[in-house]
Image (cartoon, rainbow, N blue to C red; front, side, top):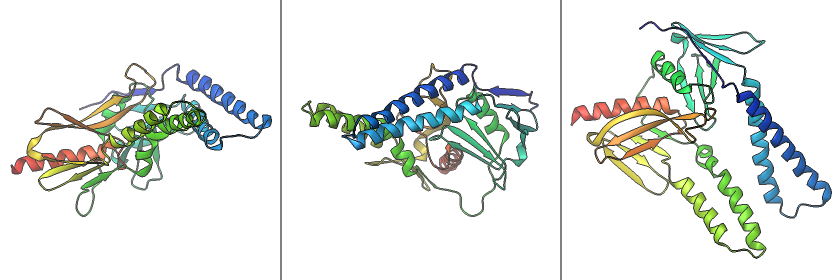
Length: 287
């Protein structure tokens, strides 16, 4: 099917938003550092945790501010990434041998067989769901040798990254507890952190007759005959925010009526979706 040329950009207010946010985080970092001139820090761990959070947020704002004027142009034959003042990077669709959704970093990586020519697409681009869909339709996974991949897992960083806010909360609550406040806030923070780690699956295993989904505390095995459908859908943490990137989430629908959502895996959502879809179809054909 012939495809018309489509151009994707960041939202108009994105550059202003990242600039303002960057100034706020920079000012906050300066204020925190000025406290060091007033006197010694009594709770070093709390100060370090806050500085790491502010520093990471500031680095993200600077990076995205520099990318805010970039454009992506898709046509029938290729994808082009345009950066003002630099040569345009163009990859034809057949050249793209690897598409990796890096959900933790909120970006989609496209590369050729050598891995030296690479296009990075941030989830914050306007109409990113449409962009992701076109890429998925126009690219084909690289041919692999040997047996297909049957185990998909999250990296340790992906498992621990969502803990940053619970950890900050626990540190602050512990400080107040040590100064006579109720321990309920501390207990809540610990429970919050445990829930954040245990609630999402961390590994998927494709067995001969079933798919096994592993959480850190338990595991569930689903027969391929009980799998109604395998879908991939973009889900947003904040659906109404135009500048909030969505995560390509693989969804397993079962005969029990429930849906298991899988995202943030090391090999990317595309690879997991393709492997799971093929395994479930093959497994159902044997039933």
